[in-house]
Image (tube, rainbow, N blue to C red):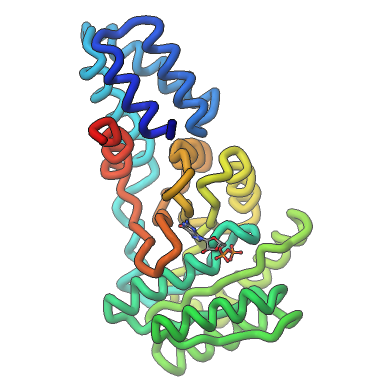
Length: 293
Ligand code: GDP
């Protein structure tokens, strides 16, 4: 049973709150990738709210739990998450291979092209010819321009050329795919530093965003990756992909709670339109709505 269905079913099975209810709830949160510590923390807060408000019905506890989750996901949001959209901006997408980074860059191009923005793509993942080809397909599909490097070339040179082109062609949003195959953290930090130096020097007027992309189906691994990238990059947002299918979803809570970076987008499929702006209330309500299915 999926995390969503299981979580919802607990509230169906238990009308009143008891120890068994709490045990099942904790187990489900842990299984759903929320993580042991955070699950215990959430349970602890739920229990004290239940005591304080004299709650006995599980349905009422559900509302408290929902609010708790929404507040956690809202904690590091101040309403400025998407301000870059209306300014001249550059987005760097970072993340390890296979998480859906290139696809996310393509989906972002689709999103902004559809909103009438002038978009330029930069294929700066020069480690893989396939990534350059893949992004070229997205460029064609979305009608966005693309600046490409050659396989084995210098990613910094691609970014440099892309900034020049963005300026010359007056592009509003420059979205850059970067390499995910970096052997160690030092290497990663150095590579990203180079890119930031180029952007700061060549494109000082642009708002800079760095999105860490993680695969929502990989649980603890996604959290570890996000942690590493946060240390290496000036991250401004998270993108959690593959939250369709087998994803448990709790990872969104775990990553956001620990990294304190807002989730800006979630990927819910492979198609261009399968990218959603992350809305904490909608996300949490969606989890609990599964009980009606
Ligand atoms: P990259 O190596 O990080 O650039 O990853 P890719 O963009 O090549 O994506 C790896 C695979 O994940 C591809 O088969 C994508 O179609 C798939 N993928 C990416 N995002 C999503 C998503 O939100 N949902 C699903 N189901 N698949 C996705």
